[in-house]
Image (cartoon, rainbow, N blue to C red; front, side, top):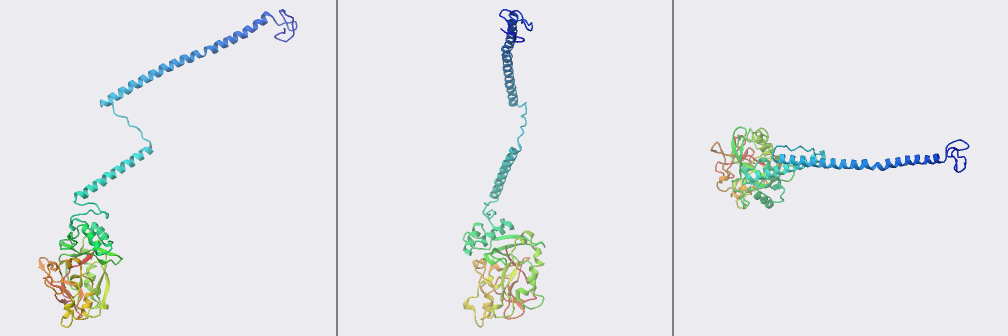
Length: 399
């Protein structure tokens, strides 16, 4: 055996180490139990460690049960009181992204309701929405000038006269048969207080100065003013050089209501811009927003059987000049207006309940001082007057 302290070999049964004097044997063996006791103590301590864990688990379980019970009780109480209307519902904070989505969804719903409301409003006015954005209404009078302008653009883009009339029929701007019968009118109040009307005379008839066709052409239903063609009796320069042309497109235009004036488009008009002549080359183009009608636009071409020597205005040479100044409008064709025929009611115009003579832009080609006119009975042509005569005005315009 060996000394546990210094490691010296000692005899079996010795009580003390012969070298260092440390006790050995039973005492030395008893030291092991000390370590064992410590180990046991440690073991006991280690063995006892799970006990607190079991107690903690029990406590945790009990706490969990209590919490669950409290939550259930609280939830029951909240729901019960909420159903009873006592407990207000708490506001729930929504993340920003969700709020944005909800707001967008709400906006879309609002837009949908607005669109439905607008559509209902259109239906209430007796019209259905069409591709132009203008509702189809029962008559010309029912449309705004902005709506008529958009419809006019559609008519002008239709391609030809037949297609243009089909578009006009769709919007109730003519009869179901595609005719104009004089009832296609709209009220207009002028700045001077004059209450008058305008009337559709044609579809896709005039060429816009900017290009393309003007969809709708109008004529005033009554005389809207009184003025000479020129301050002196001369037709030199024809319509192009006339003071009437400058007046209509200048000072008089301010009489128009703003919504109408805003949609008028300049168009190209053919006229004898020389005056006294038998040369068809005298017929040239001007660009006009407001203009007077020519003889050929009212009554069409001079019939072949009514030309030649002895026919005065319709003598050879003059006829070509007259016929070159534009073609007849649909209204006048549908109403049976002809060159030199009998009186026609659709050409009778009044001014303050008085039947009136009204100017045409057509120069009298046989002399150098007159312009043609329509008389109080609607007869065409009814003669001519000196340019300084104060006849009435019946303008036309396109939108």
